[in-house]
Image (cartoon, rainbow, N blue to C red; front, side):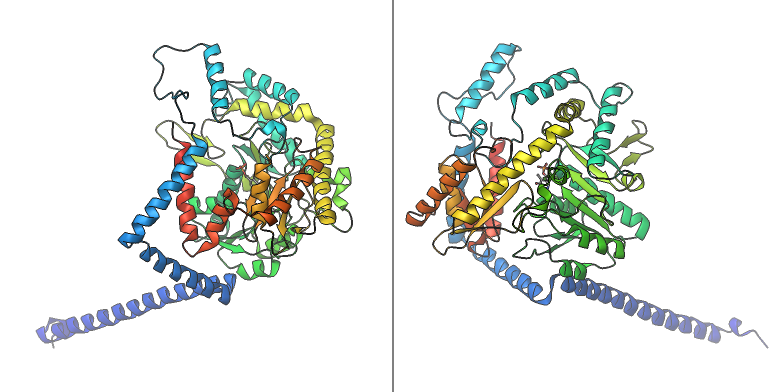
Length: 559
Ligand SMILES: *Cc1c(COP(=O)(O)O)cnc(C)c1O
């Protein structure tokens, strides 16, 4: 007998059998792959639906469809021309507000051939300051946030420190040892304020960088420890835009959870529903930028512990106010309002806190601190390139070279103020905010205060059908006040600072006048009404606002 394989017959049989088996295996693999893809999408959609709710998802989808249709309509030649005309006009308006024009304006468009003197430079700066005569004069104090101290004494201290370290760079600690030490001490002092004895942190260029670094840290931590490759994060709708910006840069899916319309705190049940196996972190603010309210950090902390997630507490605005509220006694609030709830590292589950030294720390702009519960977590923030052609490269945050002068200015401001200084500024600034809030509640029936803001920022909306609060905001602008407009609900906020202390009665008087005028002669033409109205006017509103906002950024670079 011959072995079967030697027979051409059986060989053929074997070959066809193999092809058949291979085909079947291939088909099986294909269906498996198909099932995998389908189940992945099903899982993704199910998580999305769970996080947003069916109704909101349907609404989201409907809004998207109408938007697409309208955008198509706007592409029709006739519509296109009309939109282009309107946009062109709006862009011109923006430019005229930002860029000085006229025969007296000198434009420095190329380098002077020969270097100029210091006197010339200072004189040119004065001229540029005067070119925009309608610019807000912050020294009058009628401004929300923006300038947090403005005292000449502190300015001198900061400038002296800056001068001493003008050329320093913390990227080279061996060359600038004092700057390294100052940065480490700023972080240590801030950690102490936020009750993180075992914590660790770094300085950054501002709140936005602190937040972006924290998002990156939690993303890399979740990948290393939990193997999460498609990260998602859950943020309150009142969280700062820096979280969305970070998520956009770092490719992280964001679930935005609404806040309770009365308390202005994030809906904890909805946060819980949005948590899934891909969640890397939760976010809470103390206090938030839109209306100055505080999320329930303790409840968020419980969720973070239970599901082993990160929890970032944004205290960029709370900065050096929140840690001192307790000591002033103002944290208990008054009349059952304005109470401060626990929000620092004493709350279990909190893994990171951002605190802007350049807000109520009164340090020079361009500084903030990002803190973590422990040094191990901070490791995930670093960037290390072991085999770069330029040598082993390691840096703590986004920048490479950094301004040591700003760190020195921050260290100087903090030592100059001291605990007593911050305590006193906390007392006077928060008292200013509460006075304004109380006076609105007791004497302006048309308005209401959003939530129960415990710190320095308060927002007011209208409960009167004839009073558009954005119109009120525009009338306040005409009275020299530089306030912020909010959408959803429409409201106006003021972040009190050292400069607004003592201006409470003037603010209330101007507010009453503005309301009277807004009722009698609404113009509908002010910036707040136009820009914020546009965003809600139609399905394409947001697309238009995006275009306008981009035109605004363009205009900033017009020499
Ligand atoms: C100001 C602020 C930030 C960050 O802002 P920067 O302008 O980047 O310093 C983040 N969160 C809140 C609540 C803020 O008020």
